Length: 179
Image 1 (cartoon, rainbow, N blue to C red):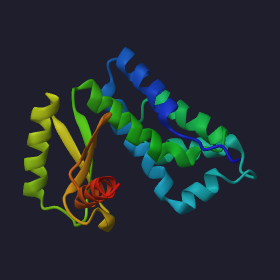
Image 2: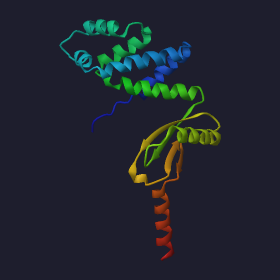
Image 3: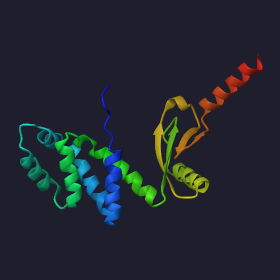
Image 4: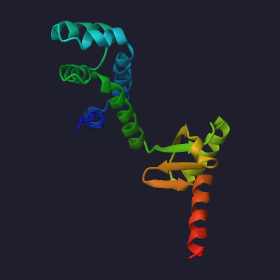
């Protein structure tokens, strides 16, 4: 079974280093900057090429990234040496979540049948914030199987106000009543 590599551990370690050095926002900016490396296919092919010496890759990265915290650069070198540069985006996303949690911002994964207008998202965000007691950012997705309504996950809490769930509940009640 192939091993799935997540950026969660690297993000946690990066967050702890940034917190210790009181450079949380700088690390976020630098991680976003290095995560953009993965979008450049030509550069990635050069960095992943085993025929190119490691020092040449390091110089190429230094030149490409410009001014970046040396510890962030060391993280990139470590990932490059392990062939894991592709998880930079994952590390950046996990770091962003840790930073939001540090500042008391929660994320709600919201699934609806159709895309929502920004005004409605803001309204839901306000309602969710009242429920959990701090700011909530909505990460919206669409899934036609929801039929209508929405499903939301805020931390460990699941709010299922979907028509699909209502219909399933009604079906179970009807089947149970027929016994």
